[in-house]
Image (cartoon, rainbow, N blue to C red; front, side, top):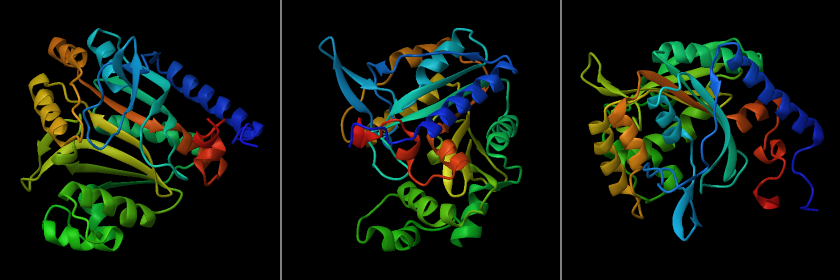
Length: 309
């Protein structure tokens, strides 16, 4: 029976209504809808994201893990505020929360600081899910409250000991340990029916966000993640605009990849030309729809999940 859809017709109607809601939200705010290529000749540099490789015209290509690079090229070319609803692809685990192909909303707002972006994301998601309760925590506060651990003061040995029940004798680096504790300890204990924003991540987890030093001399990333009922829904940045710093991060990330990945030169050229001051966010639409419809498996909101693709 695998020829049949994994989602029922009412769910597909709900998805269409959700897309219409998003488009109405941004039309009222004069944010331009755009499309960018799904296929790129450069892979994402983040070693934590595994791109799907393809071949086109005898050249190695990759399906996008997010539309971030080409959307920032549009911003550098003068597009103004933009958003996109698209498919993205990641060669990651398959399970109740993950499918190799999924739907993403990504958008960028010029001259928005991170707090203004968080407020807008809270309105976009909160109104759709009918959730008005909100909790804002720093990364440190979230760890101390739900994991009884200070992520900035804990030693590498202490972190390795805390993740041992999940990974056994496998040795992980510091950020891998922290990521595991977020997903296995912090997320399950977050309050229900609440928009939980976690911000002020360690600078080592900045990705494409700006960094800064706080009063305690900790280097932090200007980014946030949004959780609802233990589900990570969104990842937002105060976007990095310094091309020299971006090249340095690319080089560091590529050194951590199991296979060589070439830097996206078109994206770097756009940064060199000048990316306007902006903040941006990516939201997982399938997970938000799961919450709206109170479904437990991502396959239930996809017309055809990976097993039926």
